[in-house]
Structures are given as structure tokens and as C-alpha cells.
Length: 233
Length: 233
DNA sequence: TCAATAGTGTCTGTTAGACATTATGGA
DNA sequence: TCCATAATGTCTAACAGACACTATTGA
Image 1 (cartoon, rainbow over the protein chains, first blue to last red):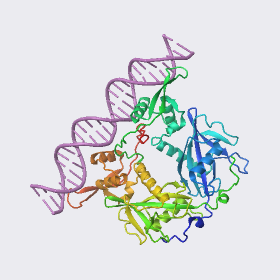
Image 2 (tube, helix red, strand yellow):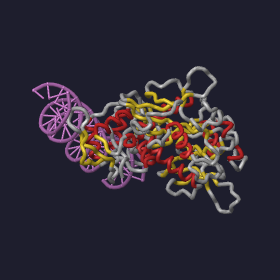
Image 3 (tube, rainbow over the protein chains, first blue to last red):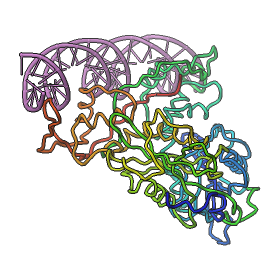
Image 4 (tube, helix red, strand yellow):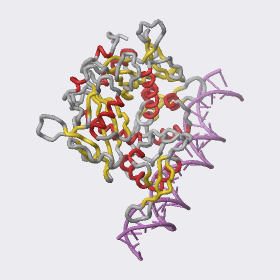
């Protein structure tokens, strides 16, 4: 190693700026919405940005992301996962060289009322964002869709008991595409993820739906073959 | 937002330390090996660590990861992707609060000879590492296996032309499990990822194998259903 | 000739998607 | 009664995994 002149990183990069940015999502009716706040620029034009703040001295990344999320939302999100670090030189509102992005999910209704400087936007109608944050948003949505079948993300957006139609609706919202009802339920049944309760919910007309709860059972990992997905095209 | 006392991240977090760490992998026979270098501690005991260095002033993350990889390897890896940022308070050799980990793949033979302070270790026989880096290694291998069917990672470990048995061997190395020959080739054929060349390679005894090259064709995205993988168990 | 590796054909069990049907409430 | 939604049954095409078999080289 030729490049290690200093023995301490803390000494070598005093001036490195590090920001923690949070992409907060919540369902709003049939749409997925994202929390943005007004930029505090001298500019008269209305500008929006992802909630962010500088990492504080001695603070861990999870602690910082929770702090930023709580400050913007007024409460804690149901799930907070890191997306990635971003530092390709794109402009960040805080002038940060490197920003670590987090994805937060908020159950429907919980955080829909936020303070004056923040507001929820449908994800397909976002205003212009600082270049560095625009990249984070895209990465967050991509990561969300990639992780949805690897971790119980969808259940974080629902109340403890829910109907299967509600669950499917959340999956469709997060994936951004429609799912087949019978296939969805068959896969759900095979995965032993939920169990029925004794309750039924009647909403408007139509047959009442049975309520389920999230109750994952141990399951042998079924790893079927190589898929080669997304490699071409 | 209550927490934004300062308008500039650069001003607020002068003392934040940021390291860039690189997990470099190369096949070594039938095993996957990782590049580690000797720690420069005052300790007499032999200690090993992932190649890392502090992010320099104004340097982008991709540039820093390339620099660290080149310094350790003597040449550039065939692929260098970010894993994630790590800053949960675990001990890092440079005392960094936050470290961004990268995964680098090196074709077989290219980087097998490295300088005096670095050495390749089979991934299931790694020496003890600093806690922060041990977490990175596990995350790198997990990410590798998750991404292998989403990006052409495996082809980066092979020469431009290769036999299908070699390709399958790389997949088995990266996934850490055996694959079924006929199924592997069927899936490969269906994905239109490779095309045969006119050349054949004879190695030792046995029927010579036809050489292929990586040549992805456009393909309609086949997204089949919801899998619910990894959600339980 | 045998051993070793490459490459292919066929069968079977699983499952996603389509479609149809029944069930059960409200208007 | 009609309509909307829930829930389930059946059929089919796709496909993974297993197995067997042929092909082609070196020893």
C-alpha cells in the first residue's frame, strides 16, 4: 500500500462533508407519496428537497437517519433501511461531498399530517429536486422493489390486522404494477407468511373480507435455479 | 425542521471521518479468494484488514474506490460496485465513523500476484478482521449473490471467450452452490446472453468445448409473479 | 478400449397466469 | 333483484430438476 501516509482517517479528512438523507414513503389512497420539505434558500422560487441533515459528531448512521426522519415526520417511520452512499459529485443542497440515503416507510394515515414546511407528493408527480437527491429517489424506489420480496416491507405499511386485498394493494403500490389475485394468494399461502384471525371486515358493499395478521412460519429455503433476470434488455 | 441550525454540511461536520474500503475477489482454482493486506499496527501479532483509505478532499466515491483497489491490486478490477455505507459504531482500523464499502471483481490470474503486504485468502478461511470490516465482508458476499442474476457480474471474471462449463463454474463459485448443467444451459439459452464462436478449446482429455462470448440480446422483461422469497425462516 | 468431459433429449413435478365459478354482503 | 367484492377450483404453458443418452477427445 503506497497511499497510506496517515494512520488516522479522522486526521486525514477533516473537511469531508457527510449528509444523511431520508426518502419517506406512505400510501395515500391508491398512490404512493413521498415527503419533501421546502428548501431554505434565499431564492424566492419554491424549491423542495428530501429531509436531510449533517451527521453529528459521534453519531451512528442509524441514529442519524432516525433523527432526520423524526424531525421531518413528527414520529418514527415503521421501517428505516439504508439505500446506499452517494458521492459522484452531483450537487447536494447542503454542499455535502457524500450523502447516505435511507428509505423510510410510514403506515397509511400515521404521518399524513405534517408540519408547515413539509408536504407529501405522489411519486410520479415529484417537483424538481437537487441532482444528488433525484438520484437517491430513483435508487430508493428501485431498492424498494428489489427488497419487497426479501423482507417484510409491505406489512410495515398496514395495521396489525388487514385483509388480503389490502395486502395485495400495498404490494401493487410498492411494485408499481398489478398482480394476479389468485396467484398472489396462492404464493402467500405457500410462503406461510400470514394467518387468519376470527374477525371479518365489511367495507361498503361486497362480501366481507377475513382479517389476517403477519405471522411468518419457519420454512425451508426453496432456491430454484438460476434466473438470469435483468441481464439483457 | 427543527434541527437545521447550520446551512452548510461542510461547516457542521468538519470532524466526520470517512473511509473507503474495498472487498476484492478473484477465483483461485475452485475457490473464491479475497485480498487482504497486513495491518500497520505497532502490534507484533500478524493482523489483516481490507484495503482502505480515507476519502480525499473533493474526491468522488467511485474515484476513491478505484484508487484504493488499484493501490492494493496493482491494476484495476474488472468491476467495482458499492455495497453500502457502514457506520454503526463498530471499530474500523482507521478510526473512521463511517466507511463506504465497495465490491471489486478480478478475473482469474490477473491479480493473483500482488505485492508483499497483500495476500489472497479463501473466503471461508479468512483471518480475524476488524469488526467493522467483518460486517462489510458478509454484506459484500450477500450482495454479490443477490446481484449475480441482475448484472453481468460473472462475465467479469472470465476472459472474453469462455466455455459454458467455465461460466457455470464461476456461477457456482459466486453462489456457493452447485447448479444443474442442463438447466443452467437451458436458462442461458433462453436469456440470450451468450453466442457461440467458431473456436473450440481442448483441455486435457474429454470432448473439446465450444467457446462462447458475452453478447446480450434485447429481451422482453419476463416478470413472473411474486415470490415472497426470504420472508420467513 | 476406457476415462473424462461436452452437449442434448425427454420426462415429471411445480407453479404462474388465465379463466370460471361460487359465496356473501349492501343497495 | 342486481352489483360489488371475496375466495376458490381448474386448466394450461413455462420451467426447474432429474436422468439418460450421445459425442468427442486423450490416455
